[in-house]
Length: 302
Ligand SMILES: NC(=O)C1=CN([C@@H]2O[C@H](COP(=O)(O)OP(=O)(O)OC[C@H]3O[C@@H](n4cnc5c(N)ncnc54)[C@H](O)[C@@H]3O)[C@@H](O)[C@H]2O)C=CC1
Ligand SMILES: O=C(CO)[C@H](O)[C@H](O)COP(=O)(O)O
Image 1: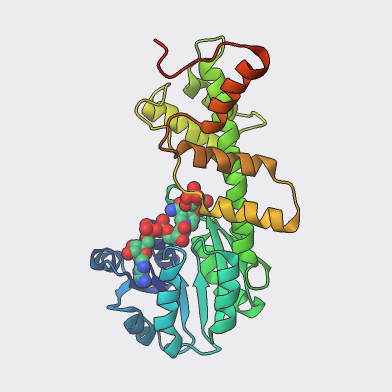
Image 2: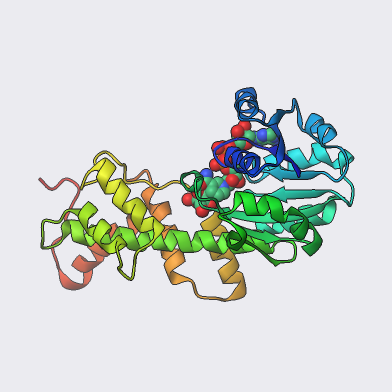
């Protein structure tokens, strides 16, 4: 099969390499010409623009977008659209909002597959987990590429109609936030608890047979090994948040309780406040004086 790949960053480049390794042909484009040159060195046919990529693919185009969610996806689709027809298939492998994917599926002439991708750059060697939404014939058509990019045949499946792939990935990310939060809380207790513990050793022991073993826990083990038991200079600030926000918004709309995901998202927002004093905690501090005449710790206390 011949696959066009647009977006050759951390994730797109892995799509290129794994597709080439499986014996397929790849035409590659990125706004960054160095990324295109690197992909060409790896065996891809370089394209000079989105339009050039479309023209190099000929009939029955198979195209994988791996660009940042939002405007970049629409920009690439706008350029592709005059070159697409109903026999073509476009895969969006990024973290797009599922309602955007439904809109794009309805407005493009091509068959559109929204593909949630999990595994991250660190998972490149084993392949990704792919959650695909869209027409069944288009999914079936792309199976050889999905087999190559995923861990194998069990690493991908069609979730349902347009939007369902990105919907499942959105919820996956909510779960990711909550798992990160609970590992963080457990290690925070261990770090401040009764025993002087080697947290890398704890994580390694848990990763070998414990109920709570997981890849995220392996990454905790790696973090303690590389940063030290106290995480060294790693700042108390967590970026990201868009996919978790969508998850919580959807849960509210569906009237489904997701308190752990909500709390984990809130912790991220909290970590980013510029004011080191959290207003709600300061008010709770003062209220304890109000009802109990308890001492009020103050910022100018010695
Ligand atoms: N990094 C991760 O762990 C994961 C990322 N994703 C999603 O995959 C997508 C890509 O992520 P990354 O590879 O990490 O981002 P990245 O920032 O490493 O790469 C994005 C690439 O897209 C290129 N690009 C941007 N607009 C373009 C356009 N209009 N035409 C052609 N190229 C364009 C950029 O030059 C860049 O090389 C995002 O939607 C991200 O949310 C999904 C799962 C995991
Ligand atoms: O999808 C992913 C992992 O599964 C990406 O790493 C994503 O960026 C994570 O979300 P956030 O940036 O909000 O932490």
